[in-house]
Image (tube, rainbow, N blue to C red; front, side):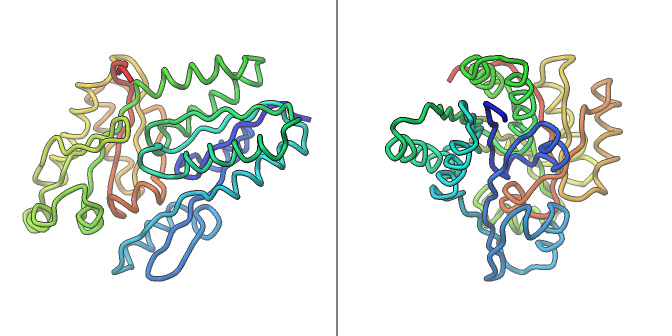
Length: 289
């Protein structure tokens, strides 16, 4: 019988085998596309969703994990005898999922006033494996006997350092998401111009516009190299596996060592960027909250 549980949501983009290995539970976001509702990780894999987007004329919309799903999960932990629940969430300002978790925790406390189970919620301030990988570390720390308070403090420190830089090769979805203006996106598609966008503490910013597929690879990697703490690991995420080798080779040649991991971006990211994008995750200097 486990005394702790690590919970997250499907925007973490954590591969199923890693979630299983580290005993991480995942609640899934809901996605609507072309009038049909889906559940991430249940109705499609990340690769399948990217292909669905390529074939679709519509724009996907994501829905948060509802309060009742969190509450039901907390009840299940209570019945299991779990004493500490650690939920690591998608960026709170970008999704109501975090707020729903807090509401469910308050509801649980009200309905089970005598329960000794403690629920701790940590906002990642980000998306994708920025927090997915740290869920694994958190689980390992708890398994080693570290108190939840120490693990939560570790996570807050890590999330104040991580940064994402991302680019899109097709601007139809990103135009509709508001990340790039409609006029700029149309011009970008016509001229082969790709935005280089940072995603830091949940805030996106276009930092460069680059013409040509080859040049944008260089631009993304140069941004990563110039902003990362030297010698720290970096990670490459894509929505299409054809980009893996190109970014991995260029990253190793420029930074001096290979990426720590390649991963597939899930629906939470590509619902805003489209089915043809690539990203790099790296550790920058610690930011004040």
